[in-house]
Length: 579
Image (tube, rainbow, N blue to C red; front, side, top):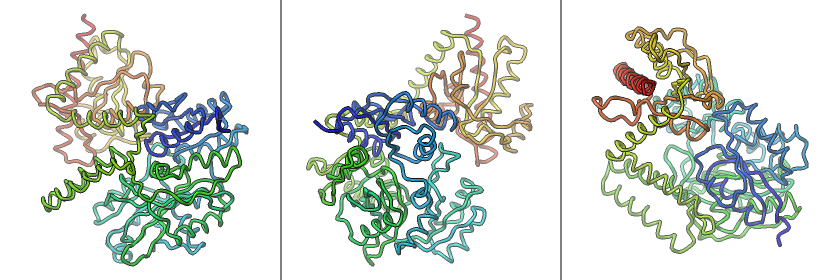
């Protein structure tokens, strides 16, 4: 029997790659696995390797609320080990660990290592101190980014990187790297990263190689390398990867980096390799379990098990050899990537598009060799993959005209049953930013119901965006005036869980992104899309899309749909009162 049998762990995350792989790995060691999941809709939650699941996130909870909830879980359960699978848990767990002073082991880096491991500027500085090659670049305030000037200095395209993927003050928002090819993309990036420092780097031609390691006091004992088989042009994670032999010079670079910090823990060093020149550079470091982890475990390097044995049993198992024929893919991401690639190629060459499509589809036959793996699939734990496949099919079916119409009819029927079963006391209009659609809908609803049998309702508007006290957009203020509505004094508000789940509360959302955020991060809500209530004379609307950054005509049409949807909402609520 394993010495880890019946030892317990609390794992933080939500995806089908690192999070689900860690869960399954610990379960195979005989451990009892509880999880804190960031999304209610994560298919990983259907794993039969999970004992208890807690749904906590930074969208519906403030950081202090999240910290308190996690602290209570840790105090009430004597876990042997805590493992975060992304920065959203890693940063606050450092504070929680210091506060509770428990005997629990935390798979966390030391505070002194946070800069080199998570801040891209500090990573560059540390790499240069260790004579590890990096791209040429500099740090600039976002408002100083000028495409023409920087392209002359660093070439086209440019690589623009926020200094960290997550800011500790805004853990609900991931900041993305941009490979910029024109001024428009840079201007949009500046809006999304206002008042932030940005690392500007020259583009390095080649493909991505990841070298994953486990180190103890700076000494690397286990390592694994993979290359990206498919790689998005715009940057970001790869949907399909393969095991490769470790380049000795890259492994030596990882060893120097770990020795420099006397680092203990897991890390994935991401390199860019040019096959023509054989040059390479270090891109970044992920000092927590990474997206390509399923491939490493499939190839024979079970990093979670190795880490657990090291932390809980003091056993260091060297592991540098593995199956070089192993492949792994993120199923949904690969399907979407294949479609996106086909659409891009098809606009230029149908022959090239179809030949590449056949090549990508043929790669699935490699599954028959058992060297290829789908990240979410395991014979002993099939539900996560089945649910992932079902969600993919469901998403496509919802786009079909008949399914869309039937779904809308079903939602309206369910809505009528909901308001009939309990009285509505609070009506909340919720869009993403609470600066364009929801404040107008709220004011319009209040205006139309003043002096009616619905005037007793408490009406308000909120947004999912957590930066509050923003004014309504000037274009919205002007457009609202045509409906005799004044939005000049509006200030945006964030929707917390406590408000969303108030008794007898009805939430009106506007688009599919709102629906995703509400279902993923909030519990015990009664909601319907205002798009479902748009009268049939306008045609079918799956959403009342965000007019942010769109034309005056687009905004005018948006407000017309909101006006008619609100009329239908009022009609249904009044009809329910008359019953």
